[in-house]
Figure 1 (spheres, one colour):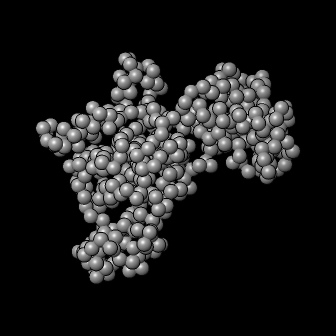
Figure 2 (spheres, one colour; figure 1 turned 135 degrees about the vertical axis):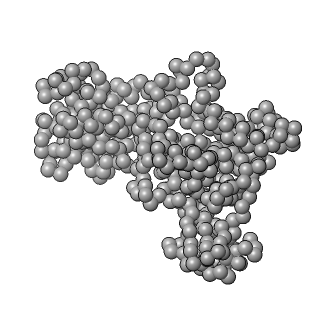
Figure 3 (cartoon, helix red, strand yellow; figure 1 turned 90 degrees about the vertical axis):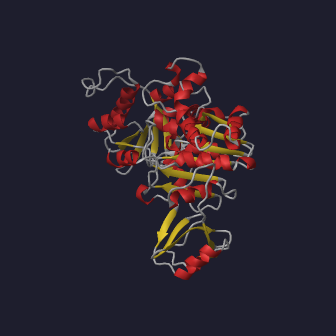
Length: 445
């Protein structure tokens, strides 16, 4: 590698590769160093069906094909207009680090040591550690080694993230009356919308005491009225919830995201809409990623696999119980809900269980989608077969995953990249409806 005042070399941590196996292609003309410690850690992830295992295998295969038998310590080109990638072997702990990192065998410290040796050996070149581990980045900066998060798939402007709906005040009263008179709607030009509405964007149109809920139909360029609808005993309590129900029940929109903080009704509305639409689908599936809140994995929990996953799936059962509570056990709807579970027409399971499945004519709800990586979201959507509707719900500000945040999680990425697509609709729920106490806690604590 040639030294230059503007040249950069990025040193990759294992978690970056496990997050995105194609990461080495995203550093433009700059060079990349893979510490041998990282390859050792990747070796532990090669077997399995999780996304981490996929990324570990894909990266190692790509690196092997790229090297073509060459010695990687000298570096090999990544591609046209790209830098070079090389593997660096471990070295004795640098004397500057011995006092600070006595545990030299720890993988993080080995990665730091390799980066420190490189920076000290070639001061004319800028070496940067790239890691999704905040603590490792802090350690690197403490020893004078620049460190950054992997932000290639980050949402650029979280504050400006698409909400799926907007308010329009001062609309022509005649236009609002026309919206109420029929389902044909009015041409988009009849409303002063700036910027122009996106496909399936929802509108709260107001003029004094007059108001209407509406949606932009990209197919004919019209603004059509959205009627407040009750689904499986659940009635929307605000405009955004009405929009969510409309999107969740629209067969022309096979991909829907519903975001919002705790208590806004995301999961409840999605499940109620799915049950209302059950005749159009072969099966309803509710799934959620298992992200333990402590350092103990489900393998530490007692019992069989169902006993282990039950605590993680309980919130979904709680929402189902709310819907069943709207009807007596003897009523036709109450008996129908029991049959759906017994006949496995309605299933609740961990998200990992869908791998390898073909999702045909299914209504699939993925809860807590903010704990998914962008690659995991893509994997789920690309499994959708004919007649399948996929719904993602979550709160982009409540992340349990150790290496994701509000800008890098799969739900935020999906909202940013899919906005305006005719097959997609999004609604952000703002008002909590669980209880006054829950709303107060959400705002103040």
